[in-house]
Image (cartoon, rainbow, N blue to C red; front, top):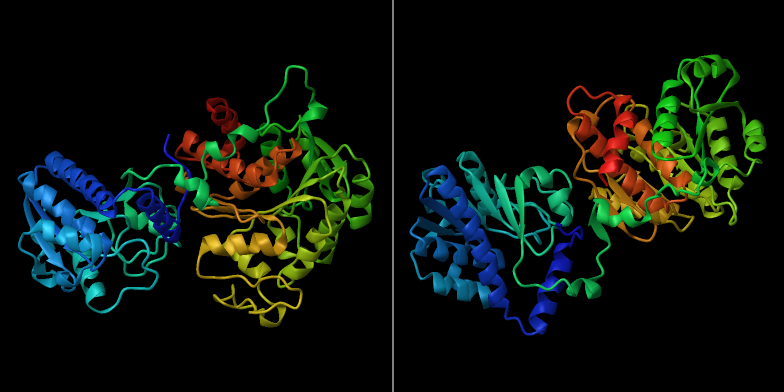
Length: 521
């Protein structure tokens, strides 16, 4: 099975260094990397009947991989042109050795026409490039993209930041060959799209180096959380599988709660109750069967309801309505959790908007609570939550960097340069698990762990799918699954259910498809 660890460029540098320190020459790693690239290019050429290869090599080790690939492809009988960005005679170390071993004609990169090739190998810049390309490098990348030829990128498409997945003006590859472990930029958008098909290959780095590197970023797949997934026991009963509450909105906004409740029941919660205001009791009762119904409206009624200690989790926020009462009920829910009753709590949608511009108040409430808290914002909700009140504007969502650079509460300001780091910093600042939703949903925990999903199909962009996700998380929390793993598991199940159903998906289909996905695990 493909590894789930994601290594930053810095982590990958440490993996190289640890391997070299253990006695493996750096050039041996480069030779293997170049061989893997050459084999991928040769396979493509043979499958498509081509012979001509244009290899563009940069001024570092990524270029060294390119020179190795060029030599091996030439030796295999292919027609190879090499274009160098910068003077290759200035190369050092392993890259210099690779250039000398190539020993073929090397042109200045602009002199090589990518349109004449059957495949183009991009070996200009590796994953550690953390600034946008400009000048000659940007001009060359634009030429490669404009040539309309299949591009095989080495490690990452040139111009792409391997840590963030960001890279305006980067190469748009047909396929990317990377080494040892994927990087966050291979999975995050827009990097995942720029990479095309991703081929993970091994170059002689042993998995044991991971023990010292201790990566905290993972691709969200079952090995990350499957061992902690709840499983019904023969001697068990419904009360042992937890009781999930789902808060309903008023009469005209009840569907979101029912979607979440159905999903929580399908995710395995033993009992699920929709908590409804009085005006919505009839419409909810007409739609519910296995799911129970209770009445509660304001904070006082919620406080009375939560005095029943059999309730183990709650989904609060979808279509609930925004106002002071919403923030107050969220506070009641947080206060109801105690060390011997660590209530699972999913705050979504209106529960987040109720704290817009006042995330520190929410953080203080979470900090004094024993609840296992998961927040599930999409980008707009995330930005509203972390926008300072003094900067709020009715004209739209905040611009990057609107969050204050300092905090009287001592909480850390958020960094808007990377989705991964935004989620991770928010989780640490709030003391809760963050599910920052999207086609590359990031789950981040206060302990620094993060998981990036790559299995969500575009059909999930449909009304109500987020309510279903909140319900799945709530159902797993109700069964006492740890918050980070419950959130990551739910995100993956949500994506797989959409994949299993296929075209024409609506939110109601997701809970009904969930048993098939769980059974396959």
